[in-house]
Each structure stands twice: as structure tokens, then as C-alpha cells.
Length: 576
Image 1 (cartoon, rainbow, N blue to C red):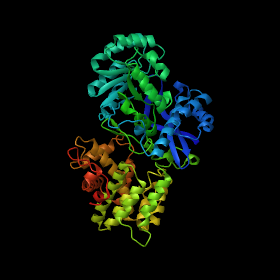
Image 2 (tube, rainbow, N blue to C red):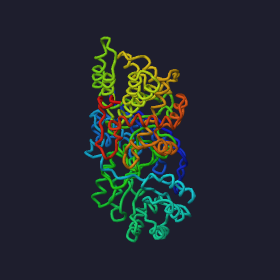
Image 3 (tube, rainbow, N blue to C red):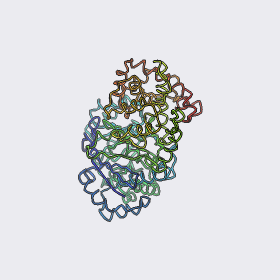
Image 4 (cartoon, rainbow, N blue to C red):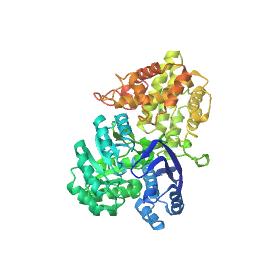
């Protein structure tokens, strides 16, 4: 196995302040482990508070690179060997551990949560963090975060009581507070007494991490549960915290990854402690890795990716404060726009899930029916989807775009089958080749092999802006206009109580479009530019696409909670 790492620098949407520091950019690492044709990926989020920086992390990777061995399944043995090479460096070890689990899941074709014997249906809701600012500004942030049922309030200022009071005045959310070790024991006693009337669910790390006796004293007299974060780094810390706190906050970056976090969860349970899984400021890669452990814990604080100006990965989704685990093999994470964050010389193709040999066999089978002058049909296109796209969420997205493209073809008097297959196939290579420098080029190769119309290939290539191919025909413009908006419409529908598209209207989608914290992975600018290129009104476009998606609502899983969920089948999708 080969180990690679490269800097992953991600600006935050706004400064993130806690009691001891302020962060403007996350200086993380992207970690990759390659075995043959498969690549496992992980994220390292080093913090100086725990003795690591991006530079020390890169140096540690060079030390570890020659000691992985040849068997990715031997994760415990690999971790023990790396510990002998260079002790601690838990953030780096976390990224390596994530990548190993991702690689193993991809080899077996199952999500990590299934490897661990867990059910994605049993996950607690996550909190959303309000970082330190003026009391009025923090209350404003709480109003903006009204879609999140749990708020975590950062404290450790001279105005802590005012902060909580003003937030409680504008929000009925469950409130958790985190002082990040800023209070003395005396201050903590006073603050706990003052905060009790404001319905606080728990207080995290009120005093410095080394004062276990102080934590014990606080817990004995506090009406609010006390949780340890900075006091709980590895398994060895848990026994001495038993009886001193009510629960512990476990972070993959602190302890060394999924393997160590699993041990910490079980040790904490054995000592009668509640368990929270937390995070640093990380992309959806690191957040999704932690989320695979969610069914094992009581509390989640996995909002780190929501703090970024732009998230370079697509992974776990948040719906009404709950994390929806991806169903793809391994971590189920795919890159979205890594080229924006990595140097040109560092960009590499990150391969998708499954055995490439098996994928090529399925691909050859999908192409076989087109080898004797047979003009490809929608059924042939669906076979290509089945050969290369395993994630149900991606299939549904492609079917939604297909429905919108068919509707526009009818409106403009164009070839509905041609436009429909363009929509269906526009992301057919994305799961296996998510790097934007490669995405659509593999699809173009497959489609040419299959004898597909060159206009389909042109539109698919042109919809990837990285290719810089002019969208000089109506079908290409329609594809870009329909692509991102279908994702925003679906996300908006799923936020509704009935989870149905049938009564969804354009103003609701426009409202969510303005909320940049909602469905952050959807590029608003692409929607606006696409509508302008097509020459249609945005509200009319949204209404038009909603109506098109309604025609296959059961296929998209958007018919509502009162009906059985649809499945992504070729027959249903073609009924539009």
C-alpha cells in the first residue's frame, strides 16, 4: 500500500471564535492510501492545542509511509506498528485510520457502518455551533440557525450570561454550552447557578482539563450534566474521569481515528458515562467518518463542515438536524471541487468504490448491445447507469435531471429521448471519477464506444465548467440550468414535514436558495448562470422543474411520508 498526503486549506465562512483562539482557515491534510486500483481517503485536522500543525503532520506522514504493510484489513496491527515508528501524532493517525476503513469498505462494497454492524437509522441529532461574538450578534446567528434543533453556544467571555439570555429570548432550541476550559472552578459554580433557569442540556469542559478534582466537585453540585472534552483525549483518560463528569466528547482527531474512538466508546460505557462524538473544523470527509459511529453514541456535535466557506467533499447529509449517512461503499464520500483547494501538481484522480475489474465487466456488458449499429435507447442508457452508479442518491439526481430535460424538450419542440438521455447520463462517471479534471471525459469515452449521439456527449462535457467548452446549443444550456436546481428542490422538499414535492412551490425553494447554510454543496452561482444562459425567469424555471420532478415523485422518493417510498428502476424513471 502507498500513503500520500497533501495540504487541504479551507477558508471558513466567517471567523470561528472560542474562548482561547479564533480560526479563519482550516489547515488540514488530505490523506490517501492506494492499493492497486483502489484508493481510500481520510482527513487530518491538526491543532496546535494538541501539539500538531499541518507541517508536523506532513513530516509524520513521511515517517509512516513505508510502514503500512500490504494488508489494509490489518488495521489494529498497522496502528500498533505506526505507534512504534512515531508515538502520538493522533491527528495524522486519524487520517490514516479513516483511509484504511474507506479502503476496506470499498474492497468489500459496503459502508463503514455496516462493517461495524451498525444501523444508520439510529443516529441522534447533531448540534450546530454558535461561535463567540457580541451577545446581540450571537442571538442573530441563533435566529439564522433556526433550522437546527440543537445549538451549542461557545462561552468563556465577560458576557456569558447575556449571551445565553439573548439567545434564549430568540430561540426555543435545545441549548448546550461549551466554555472550552475558560472558567475557574469558582466561576463555573457561579455560571452554572445563573444558567440553570435557561434550560441548558449540558455544559462542556467548564474548567481547565487537568483539574479532575474540580470537575468532580462541580458535577456533585451541578443540576446540569457536565461533559469533558479537552480532559478526554484518549482511552487512558476515561477511567479517571468516571465519577467526575457525566459524559465525554470523543473526537477522531484527538484519539487517532475510528479504531481508537470505538475503544473509547466502549470504555466510556463500561464506566457509566454518556458519549458524544465531536469534531474540529473539517470537511465532509472527516465529518462523515465520525458520523459512521453515530449509532453508538448519545450526542452528536458534527457541524464542522457547515462552518466552511466551501466544502470540497460530499458525504453525510443533514436533514432537520439529523445526519443521513451515505450508502456508498467505504466512507461513502466523494470529492466535489478539490481542484480549488489543492495545488495543480497535487491533483490526482480519486477512484470510486468497488472493484475496477468488476466495474469494467459491467460496463462491457452495458456496451455490448450497441456494437452492431444499434442506436442506443433509454434502456441502454439505464444499463450504463447500473454499471457505473451504485449510490441511490446519485441515481435519483440523474433521474430528476432527466425528467426536467424531457419537460424542456417538449416545451421547445426538441427530441425528448435525446434530451432525456442527456439528463440521465450527465453524471454517469461521477461516482468512479469525481475529480473535476476527469469527470465527464470518461463518460464521453464510454458514450462514444456505445455509439451515442455526439450532441449528448457535447452537452455532458460542456456542463463541467472545468472543461471550458462553450455551451452553444439549447440542450447544453438546458442541462446546466436543470442540474443544480434539481438538487436544491429535492433538499427543500425533504425538509418539509411531509417530505413531499407535490405541494412544494417556488418561493420555498427561493428562500432556501438564499440561505447559504442550507444544502451548502449546491452551487447557487451555477443555478443563476444557467438560468441566464437559457434565457428564462428563475421563479418560472423553478416552478417548471418542480412540475417535471412531480411526474416521477415516487422514483425520487418525494411522494411524501403517506405513501411507500419509490425505488430507482429503469421502468419507473422512463414513465415521465
